[in-house]
Amino acid sequence: MDDAQILSRLADLGIELPEVPKPVAAYIPVKIVGQIAYVAGQVAMEDGQLLHPGLLGRDVQVDEAAGAARRAALQALAALREALGGFGRLRGIAQVSVFIAATADFADHPKVANGASEVLMEVLGEEGRHARTAVGMASLPLGTCVEVQVTAEVDPA
Image (cartoon, rainbow, N blue to C red; front, top):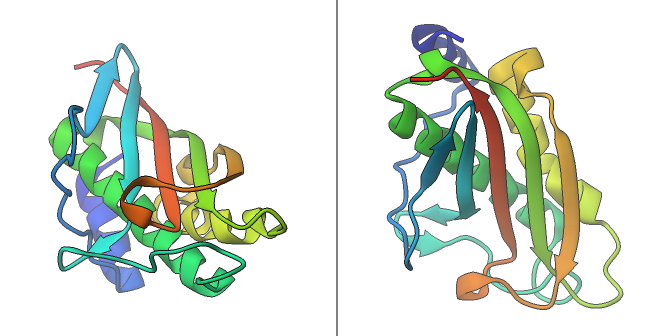
């Protein structure tokens, strides 16, 4: 993939990549092993503030959580770009895992996860298509409603 093309696509979509959040614990944002880049779980932040804390089915609406998933996926793209020195080595997104803090009776996990999936496909086209897991959790770090983890295929350094 070409860095300039992806940046142009982002601009055309009116999307600005967020800054890469600093780790809040003992981990690194991206670990590259061979041709696989593992992006640490992203919690949606904006201006240093957590987006939509709480549980789906009680405190947070599906559209709010989908927006948080979208933001977290963009943070993952920003982390990938930083780790790779641009999008030039990115071959595509392989897997996206979306963890959703929800009440026991909440059942719209796919709608929330679509926030992440759709933005990756908007930005990267066919290379943004991926396998996905969307699961409910009793709680997530910092009280967030959504955490998004991305695995990507990359060209070796």
